Amino acid sequence: MIEPVVRDLLARHPAGVPATTRPDGGVRQSVVHFALDGDRLLVSTEPARAKAKDVRRTGRASLCVVGAAPPYPSVTLEGVARIRTAGIGPDTARVWSRIGGQNAGPLSDADLAAMNRVIVEITVERVYGGSYLESTA
Amino acid sequence: MIEPVVRDLLARHPAGVPATTRPDGGVRQSVVHFALDGDRLLVSTEPARAKAKDVRRTGRASLCVVGAAPPYPSVTLEGVARIRTAGIGPDTARVWSRIGGQNAGPLSDADLAAMNRVIVEITVERVYGGSYLESTA
Image (tube, rainbow over the protein chains, first blue to last red):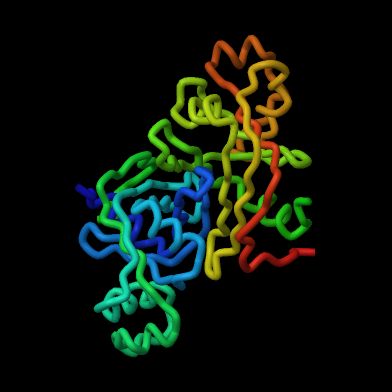
């Protein structure tokens, strides 16, 4: 369902704009590093962050990814979302590897809990608004 | 209310990610060129676009702007939004000047109506999530 040209864009751009719905019905946006694994979008955050609370409450999130230069290739992905705290070492390593720097291998859930990190996992159900996507192959 | 460091980022990055609320309560995101004039964010679009319909229905929108390179400076602005069709030549020219290319001066409302263009105007009420903002001065 996630086409190769979309995967190419996401592979090249490690930062994206997640959006969630606030308690008052308004929209909340921010910027995060993310990883894509299969049809799962992964974000590492803190459990008390507003976006984590939105996900816990609404069970949904979207992510818009934009290329760095004109004509600004872009796409938005969305789906059901949840907060995970168990077995999150490998997924956290996937996200952190996109930030750069060293990659010391997956941490334990206990270590990540001590660091106050959780995973926001979006299972992509819909991909829309693809613009100026092109394969690098 | 919009600080100079925020204005600097917006001046350097002509594309942003608007978010609106869908009829079903979900979030809609896309990518647009925009201009900032005072405390007004301006986007040129077509009246039948989904985001225009969302604005007409909800009267609100937000825009997240992200720098092109790590550490990805970013900020989100939001506020009341409306669709304008009258006196939009100068604002449309402001947006188009950010896309590049020639700048032939403001078109008339009749010309823009024939081109099926309207202005989405967001009057910024809140600025949040500023990250890695720094002055270029």
